[in-house]
Length: 522
Image 1 (cartoon, rainbow, N blue to C red):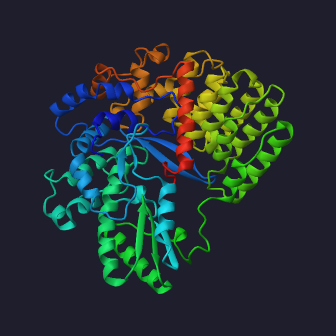
Image 2 (cartoon, one colour):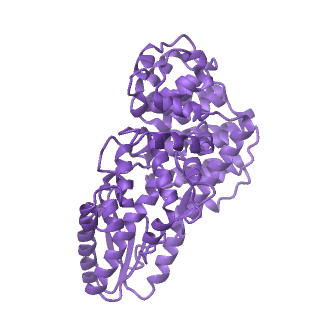
């Protein structure tokens, strides 16, 4: 954290890494200084705003909503955190049990100082002299975090209630977070690295109280925490129940709760495994005869994925397949299986997309188009941003043509990220028929659109040259848009082919981090 800058947080810690590689915050990061000067002239502006929502799969059957906050409000928070990074580090150091303290990183703005695999290995090491283990985590940690608990964690509840103004750093963070989400006090945005930084402040305060309370009640307990995961090691089941009661009470003081569904007290190591069976089987697969072994590999991967619907089994399988050299003879078989893979578990879409683009000259585009059309049709009406935007990404990259009916359906869904991609396809001639923009133009001309959850779509439609043919003179300007435009900011910026290859290399770097444990998916 000691070298973290505002530019780091904007360039590598603002937009979620789950977006298709058509989005960039580099121009924002390069020019944030101009914007910061202008914002300082306007006290407490902008006021309350809404974030763009981006719904991603979390396992096969559950979802997670990511947020892209208003850029000027995010800039205010990024500057505040970067300028006070030393004070924040002091608070982190209060925790003696956390191994997920944020550290500046080259691929994201910050990452945990240790990865999740290291956490599990450390947990195993400290457990050796203890018979029992308690594993638990915090229910919906980010969505349920009470923003007022941030100053409580940093300065104590008594001090925060006595001084409610901006004299305390925690109060400033609380105020800006509420500005990001229309004044709401419950929940912090999922996606920006700033939320990871903030969550660890609360975690450090919980840790400090927890260690003090347990040391008085239960002797010889070993504790380790990663993000919202707590592991405890002790000598008897009764100790485990007392530890659980202490943790529940401390979390309640911060308006948080234990995740009962993930809480286990067991005799160690009866139900503890450092490496999953499926990972060992898949990584040891030998590919000599593709015609024979590809079906065997996919069958094994799908069988394990069915057993662990919330695990990253198929992502791991895609990582292995990425390194295979597919011949023209065997590619049709692989393509069919890969399309089944992203249909079965849509979280694999970015990784399968990378494989398709690496084998672009072999792809049966008619077959791919049919799968993508089915995927879009299924997920568009469900509001599944991730599935639709990644399907559109592939359609755009392969030059596939979309019907005016599908185009209109995507715009009506209200999803900002997918709408930008499909509008770009229309401007490039990849949509048949006219497809009316009248309703969208009316919506984007709302006087408060810059503070709404459509700010990104409205800004790009108004000021991005890629959309000039569709929207020239049809979207009103406003003060927020003018500030961004004058600073030369553009967020939607499809890459040239060589840059796309770099982006997909980063996609698999992210995947490698998941399996080494440095990207936490809890």
